[in-house]
Amino acid sequence: MVHLIDRRVQGKNKSAPNRERFLRRYKGQIKEAVARAVKGRSITDMENGERVSIPVKDVGEPSFGHARGGVWEGVHPGNEQYQKGDQIARPQGGGGGGKGKGQGGNSEEISEDDFAFQLSREEFMNYFFEDLELPNMVKTQLTSTTDFKSQRAGYKTSGTASSLHVLRSLRGAMGRRIAVGGKSSRRLKQAQEELEAALAEPVQDGLRISALREEIRHLRTRIAAIPFLDPFDLRYSNRIKVPKPASQCVMFCLLDVSGSMDEQKKDTAKRFFILLYLFLTRAYEKIEVVFIRHHTTAQEVDENAFFNSRESGGTIVSSALVLLEQTIRNRYAAGDWNVYVAQASDGDNWDNDSVACRDILRQRIMPLVQYYAYVEITDGEPQNLWLEYERIAEEFAHFAMQKIENPADIYPVFRELFKKQTN
Image (cartoon, rainbow, N blue to C red):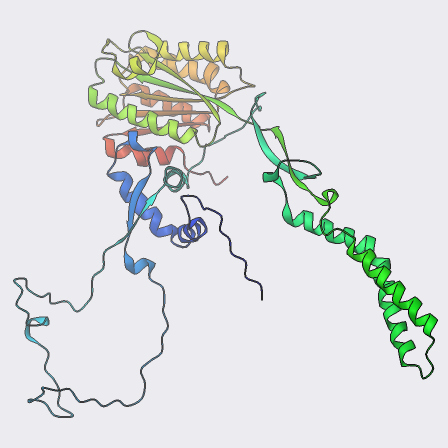
């Protein structure tokens, strides 16, 4: 019997296969734990992992053992009250009569702490986004990227010691020894049989026996001269670099910063944009984000100014849509980029301008984008902009709209906007 011991140093995830099996087996419980964890954390922390807990009863497994069996009798010293067959009354209070200050519980069940473990960032994001997808996601064109990925491509006869493939080399050496020494081995076996037959004859032929012994010695020397491992046998793993396709998209964030958008509404919109960006990072390798803020006029700004600038004014939403169309046509060709737009507003707009927004969307913007999501942050009745956008949603399947009344609605609204489509 041969024992093989693997003494290679393992990585920090020493039980990765066991962990993967655990995550697959208790997928439902982990998803529930992730959902509970998400409710208590900020969206800005979504890129971090999470410590989740699962009740021990959900991860318990059956165990088997040998029963005591048979009839057992025992003598316990110090018993002056009970005899064989007596029934012992249950202690009052459900517990022992210890001298501790605490009171024993009335429950007979033994409680155990929940099973807690740490989900990595990638695992956490996988569970959170598992039942979502990008609607109508069409990777229109793969970019001419310079990224490469390493891929196995058979074996080669030269390389570094770290890339030596031991099993492939030994298999080649065994095949070479069989091919080179096969004829000699067969003749050796035949000569040994002839020698045994010659020695068993009543009248032995000394010359023939000597010749056979000399031939056997020669064949054994010849076979032993075949090297066990020859440099010709060495094979090294061959890896080549192949182009790695990478899709690209641009995410436009349109934010209403008029006087009616207070800080709470802006913060809610900010959280929605952050969540959408994290979602897009799972589908595209290259993402560009364009921030457009508007009141009576629209301008493209950086992220800091987009979320923190205090400039405000009235509301003309069409100014943002006009700038959006110009930016798409000038910088993001329809054949090279997947365009996604997220617009956040309280819905308050000039009546005539809402009609203009509808016409701009229908005729000039919707044909250019993959998906357009509009969220109205208000706790009142729908505004005129909402009523006009409803007509757009009826005409275009890749236009979606939802209302957010308070920050707690962000996740349900996001899931509704980006839920998997059954068609």
